Image (cartoon, rainbow, N blue to C red; front, side):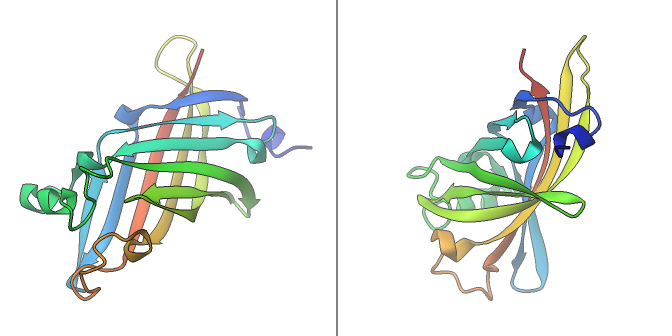
Length: 181
């Protein structure tokens, strides 16, 4: 019996991420004592569910200049060439390379491209489920995923000591996608 047949309501298909009902957020430490939280507000992507969930794939693109940390001055600094350099690197992208079941959840392995650097990244994922959408006959899927990356691995603000801005950045995704017709 496949993993897909054990998931209530599982549907094979292509799903488009709904940015209105999804979030891409991050957390890092500042000066070692506080957390700075932010989000990207402009992103898109596709989830393709296969015959079995482990045969599925994900791809997503985030517009780097859509970063929002609730502070315009900080947002401007993070968009500058000292951090994300959105003029040279306007997007971040993720492409899955595999999905595997682990206990109660899944791991989505893939490649993250940030600041012109591509590195392997694994996201711990939890399937929220499959269900009916708001429009007549529509279907939705929900997925939560998280990972932690090193900003210096991606050459982001390498000149800033970790005592000022932590090297580790936690990324959290809360995604709702709609089945394409």
